[in-house]
Image (tube, rainbow, N blue to C red):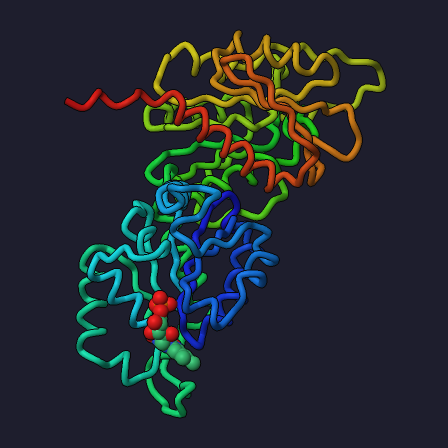
Length: 405
Ligand SMILES: Cc1cc2nc3c(=O)[nH]c(=O)nc-3n(C[C@H](O)[C@H](O)[C@H](O)COP(=O)(O)O)c2cc1C
């Protein structure tokens, strides 16, 4: 999943330029926003219209584009990754020399995001010492090279030079994006699911939370390269890959698991539906049925968010509020009372969204009082929207660099 990631796809004048069309499709299917930049030679092979229609974004080919005079800087700044596929021998030479004689090469010089090149050319060109020297120079400055495959070439020769397979290029893109970006190195702790409080040896008090929202957040943070710990109450969901899972049952166990990790937590996402009350006494055996009414005395469970707030750590804390009425008003009150950085509120009284459902419709409210309602969305998509918003808030809060002397 590349949701929320912005890839600039550079296409150069190789016979394999048509393969960039398939690549664009696969990248957008995975959720990436792709902006295509073409060289003049590339336009001799495939029309910009094809890329424009598939990416639903303008295609750029002109350094002196009247729509944006500093396109080579603004595009580079917005990109999470710059992929050139196919990359011709000519483009490799220009990039290795630091040339900036068109939009694509100027962009390569301006880019501070990872740059990946997938060369494609005839075997005789690929094996030429100057091409290999240029590749070495580019590797030497950290540019990723996705080597071409061996096989039949347009010239009739058989040898190395065919553009790497789509799957190989996509895997390289995903691997690069996972190891770069603002979430890399962040420790994200997500709580998910319900908690279960024992009445006796077999009966419990719990709630209808499925854990889907928390699991979606954990997955979205993992894809962005964060180190993720998922503290989960009992759910039926499959154990997510690449995430450290801590299974808990009660509110007290969840509290311990969160507080044990809080010192190392960059972002805490409290998506679990933690029980507010637990039976004061839990019978070690099974309570016998008596036929008459019984009363179970309930006492409050620990206030995990309250305790986290009292610690005044640097952790960015996101709370979730499930309400059935006065959604925004109650969420704002909770945001301030628990000193949260962001609250995600949803109306659980409406059918088809919220508890147990695959979709949710939430309103995000941050400390500045900004209220951002989102449409009904699948929880995995929503997870990305929430992480995007957290990133935007953290960027604004980042101290500005000292003035240059
Ligand atoms: C039919 C045809 C196919 C070509 N295929 C390739 C190729 O696969 N790889 C390559 O490096 N150059 C290839 N070239 C040469 C490039 O198009 C040429 O070097 C051009 O200047 C590249 O410009 P660019 O790197 O700015 O796109 C081909 C040229 C023609 C006419």
